[in-house]
Length: 247
Picture (cartoon, rainbow, N blue to C red):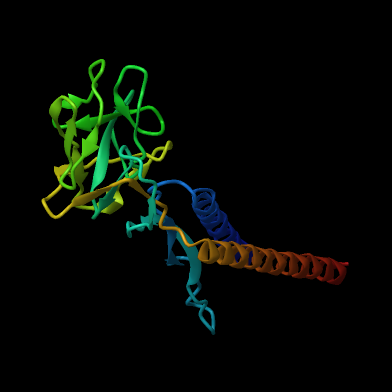
């Protein structure tokens, strides 16, 4: 019975972790460029929790093991804004931005100009170009982005947006503020990556799918809790009967 409780507990821990992942997806349905994650689990067979010397040998115990989350990098729908500073990426590339912790990456192309004339993202991080940080001079206007990332303004050509790709997209880690970090060095995006101006990419989350999954997880968690409660009741009953026999 103790083994049954431990197995149930491993399942509850896994479900609680999956609930956090799905809840985070739901919370970011309206976040520009957000990429959904899903939980990965595996079966772990306890190799020593058995007794082959019994007439009917015990079977290996099957536990649930959390193997992290998978990042789904499918393209989100485009929301047309007609704002010349809104840019969306067609392909698997990311924008590079400069933060206090170093260079980070995002799919959110809803850019603005701060009080210094610097091109920044929604969190105020400076957008990186092949010339470094873009800062407009006083009186400089008409900032535009070409499909290949080239930047122009009333002052002429101002460089090119830094677009990067990663060999293994699963190495990207969410660090908050709609940003990614990676231990893997980024590579320059290829010529097949194109930009669309006047539009931002929405999240790739399906609200119906995520809400349905929330319901399934809660039902599964309650089912395991009921099973564990019943198992604990059987254990208490067995101990009580053994005590009566002993008396």
